[in-house]
Image (tube, rainbow, N blue to C red):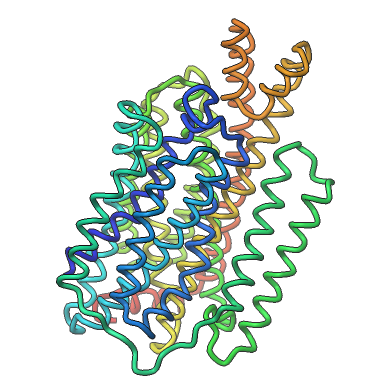
Length: 501
């Protein structure tokens, strides 16, 4: 049974990374959909958006109708949406399909954890959860490699078809060997909370992404939707605070260490998502690497995350969460700053070395912090705390792709504008959205100088984006150090992180 649940979980993590390898091809007007930066941001962000906001509803539905039932439905939705995404005829179809895949993923994650919790005895439960959690490292490492092979040998949509055999095997196993536990005391569904959280995040993301399309933050489409998103999210918080059975319990944030740890994790995933976004365009677009070469270049980072998780957990038992996770997050910020050294002639070995060190630091920051923020809660609130923790990390990803992607796009537009000034209006409009569009126009006009200008402008935009990610990660590291700074905190960390604690 555990192998089936792990196999299904690998699917979620593969899909969080595999799309990134195909973004360069999807943006290409000649070989892909000619998607604009905003459309690519939505293709990535819609998955995280639905994943984040549907987690609580999925858990409540599992309590009511059986967790195997919801898990199987999630797998089926994920598979159907993968087919839609593979043959999407335009960027809008791809965005909608990706959102549906996020919904399927949200139905799979909490139900898998609930089945493990309900079926494994206490003495085996921790090992089962650890094995299930290890699937993330496998999926994150496999995603770019599989994506690279598929994009190089087939078309961009093939990165979604790899999901189908995994879905078929996992769905068969779930229906044959996985039990269908329900809760005697069932949580009530929270449709109002689902609508408010999804709508608020969608409006906020729309406003941030829209700002990058014309490099104008003063347009009403930007400030009005951003403000509306914040208002709706504030209303969602009030509604959940007053609810007797909230799906997202904001009262948990009254614990200072729980709040600091979750905010710090959100800043980390904010930066990671943005870095993955611009990193793919840097390697494939500016440096001209193949999709498979790009996947291999990201592999040291994935290996570093897997190694860092174990290292961080062991060190945190001895030195505490603050010194380990806080300092690690500062190292991540330094890794983002090291991206400022990436240029058109940067050795690939240096890129991989920075990725490996940053990956180790990311793993060392994530594992102890997640354990610590959950452990500060009473036993009967740990399930709710875990759900909040997963949601906050996904929200960080949504905001990361929205804001950092917008900084990348708007900075590129500003930097490339002088090089486009002499082009006919139609060619200038076609070349303006992104470096991929500029390179396509440069090829049509046989303008090697224009392609070179696109590469230079993109590298500058990447540097500005990386510096922003570094600043946010630095703030998260300082917050962790401040929240877990006391000797008492270190002693508590040692207790909650030890096997017998």
